[in-house]
Each structure stands twice: as structure tokens, then as C-alpha cells.
Length: 157
Image 1 (cartoon, rainbow, N blue to C red):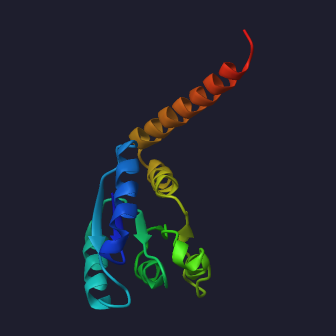
Image 2: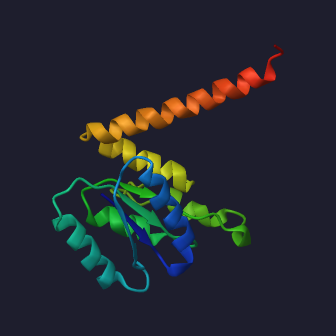
């Protein structure tokens, strides 16, 4: 299970891209919206509900500008947290720094693409789920086959 928590509705497209990428690995996800800045009590309730669920999980947090969401989530859960902040042209990527520098005791991983965040979450869950591990191997095999086919296409026959 991968709870995908968005800081606002503006992050929905990024969150949906993570959810779609997770489907390739057979990983269930849920998208929620909860701001650490604007609705911290609501976010704590959502996190408490997920933490009460015994299924293995990896959280993916998506928030731009000032990313308190990832730090707040990481400080409240025992499961891994992957921050996947959307790139902002408006700030030339400078807003990504709020995802990279965290206080001591707070350690969300940062993966900048939705597909990469989904793969990272799937690999963590694959540590205890052989079906997910097999799907990852299948995707890796297909990727390698595409590279080999692209290389072969460049070679004279």
C-alpha cells in the first residue's frame, strides 16, 4: 500500500502519475490531500489511520514550494517516506531545496520523478512481497530489451 499525500489539489497530476506508475508493479495506492501548513490536525488524523493499518506501506508525499509535508509525515510514521516534489518553473527549481534539507531525526528520501518514486516505493515493498519483486524484474527486463533493440537498430546489417 502506498498512500500518496498531496499538499494541495495543485499537486494532483503529479500524484496521479505516481499512482499510474505503481500499477505496473501491482501496488495499491490511495491519493489524499492534506497540508502540513494549513491543516496539520487533518494530516495527523490521516496518518494515524494509515499507521493503524497493519499492511506494509511506503508513503509518497508531494508538495511544492515549502515542503513541510514530507518532514511532518516522516516525523509521525515508522514507514519509509519518499518526497516527490513537483518542479516549479516559477522558482527555477529553488523550491526543491525545502525537500533536500531536513532537521535531524527526519529523513524522507527524495525522488524527483513520479515514475522514480513509484519504483522506489515498489522496491521497498518488494523486500517482503515476492510478487512485487517479480513485477520489478519484469519491468527491468523489458527496459533492458528496449535498450538492446535501440542499440541493434543503430548497427549496420
